[in-house]
Structures are given as C-alpha cells and as structure tokens.
Amino acid sequence: MGSVRVERTEDGFIARNSRGGEIAVGDNAEGEAFTPVELLLAAVGGCNIVTVEPLTAKRGHRLVRLAMTVDGEKIEPTLLGPVTVTYDVELPEGDPKAREVFEAVADRVHRRACTVSRSLSKGTEVIVKT
Image 1: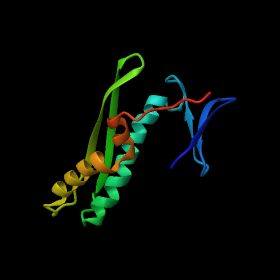
Image 2: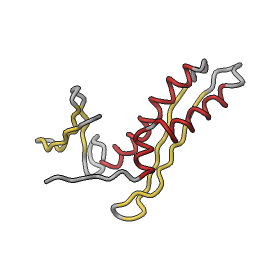
Image 3: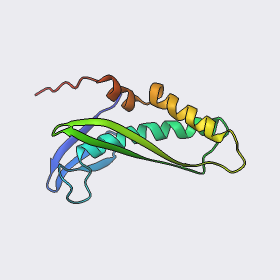
Image 4: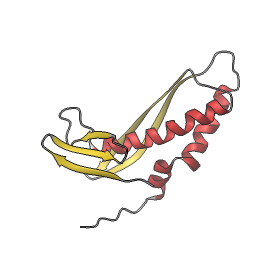
C-alpha cells in the first residue's frame, strides 16, 4: 500500500516517498524539521481531512473553511496518550443541514475510513527487520 524511505543526509534526516515527495525529519525542535511524533499527528490529520472534504462536498455541502488541529501528549517518555482531533470549519451560509452532514461524515471517516486513525486505535503491530 505504501512505502517511505527515511535516511540520514548531510543536513539531518529526510523521509521520501516513491513519487518524489520529501519531508525533513528531526528528533528535536531545532529547524523546520518535523519530529516523528509530529509526523504521526500530521498523518492522523491528513488522513481524516483528505477523506472528509470530498465526502462532504459530494453530499452537496462544500465547507467554506476546513482545517483541524491534532494534539497528542506523551504519557510516558516513549508512549503517546490519546490523540485529539479538533476540527475548525466554517459552514456555508444558508445551508441548515451542513453541520449535520459534516459531523456525520467526520465521525464515519474516523471510525471506518481513515486508515491511520483506525490503525492507531486497533494497535497495529510494527515489525522491525535488521
């Protein structure tokens, strides 16, 4: 389904996909690199938002603004606690059903369609090969 290569470079670490996309990865707050935990939070947000947007629009309720904040906090030095997704939406004026449709779609996406959220919720095993 997907593969990403992460490697050390002269400037730090880079994650690359097979389509040529890259993102800087760091282990601290220096520079513009995302930490691995920030990438995980971005994956949760990205998976949800790119699925919610077209499904809401397909139902005839294109949102004026669609954004979200994804928060996570470590409960142990190497373990995240619950991840919270908070949507920031602006509904179209004069569309009384837009909120109902958006909330139903967002809930359904989280529970059934977002691979990242579902995988975290179910505790997907990570296998390390050396």
